[in-house]
Length: 145
Image 1 (cartoon, rainbow, N blue to C red):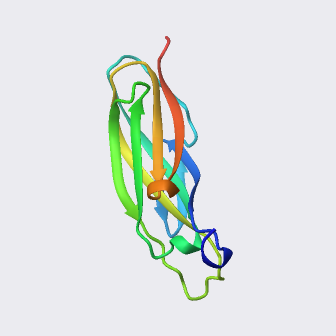
Image 2 (cartoon, rainbow, N blue to C red; image 1 turned 135 degrees about the horizontal axis):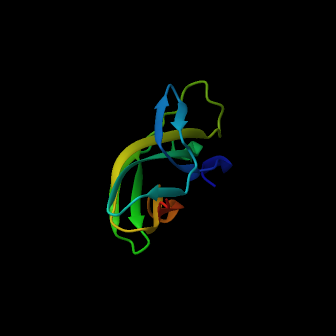
């Protein structure tokens, strides 16, 4: 807990794999969300993948730059894509003391899978000992028929 008992951390509330995602006026719009299987006729295969994430920012973390990293990798840890950035939410005058706020991220990426098998989206938010991590696995299967 931070000063005066306020929650001082960051928390990844959701991490989704989808076909398309965007944030407009604080709302998440997505298509084909929540999948964990991609069917391909052959490998290597090129496909599009979107990542949607929501990070809950604690009262003490407002007005602070928080690092964010999203990595798409195979089961052996080989990176297919990486996004490094920061997020920062302000503290509006009408925000009740101790409130948390949601910071959302949407990224649409072209990917190339070299083999059938397991992959994952891994997200790290926050800094140092107070960083948090979430992982969402997905598989590339050989399409039958």
